[in-house]
Length: 299
Image 1 (cartoon, rainbow, N blue to C red):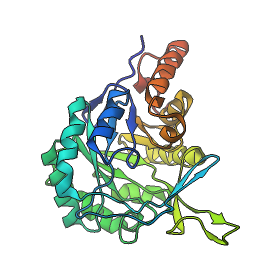
Image 2 (image 1 turned 45 degrees about the vertical axis):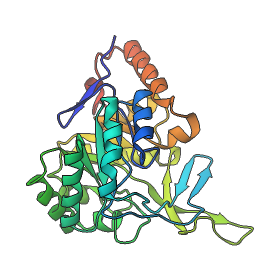
Image 3 (image 1 turned 45 degrees about the horizontal axis):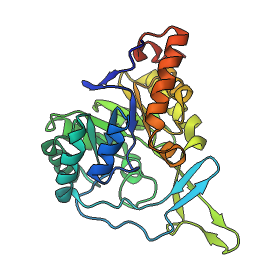
């Protein structure tokens, strides 16, 4: 049987299919359930210094080929999240703590807390497209990105992953600024909008949101391809993954593992086991013995 396990930044995952940040991952029990039902690892909801309630509804718009959302980074705050991490880690699989902040000091405090909670790694949300002062506003400033990651790498013992935004002119410029990280996460959602033509106004309460799902897969593939060409770093591919073919495409573009989120909305929690089975069948049929054999093969 083909070996579908992967090792990224020193962390071994039983399969390359991780739960992406932002989907069923604010609560320890739901993270644990996703892990128990087939995910190789999980990334938590992005957690900040203080509790945030997020935006008023409507915050999600279902589309034919994905979801448009502007939830507003709701989270309980880092001090309250330790108990959730404890529950999630009971699954015995890697849990990565996602964090967001506006400056290097807050990022350091958040990552230190995640490390103390037992997170296998931290994922820096440098790419949320719809919250002022955080996410892509931080991640589009190369000097600030470089400062943040340099500060963390000198003090944090666990791996640091940088989740970058597609909503920039040149993703390689931001990847260069983030190049001290242990892995890149590509991509976050693409900035978008939907109009209610009857109400004559934007559907989302925040007006602008982030597009995820099938529609953004070509953007994600292109970002992974570009960064793989220019940097010798592991890459988590994110965006529009619904089946084994999508996973293989990301790997051949240069990914070392993938993260799945929106597909849970359309296929349910069973999507991880389904894709895992499809992957094993594909690899056996095509003569691949391990996932690493496929990485960057299209270059």
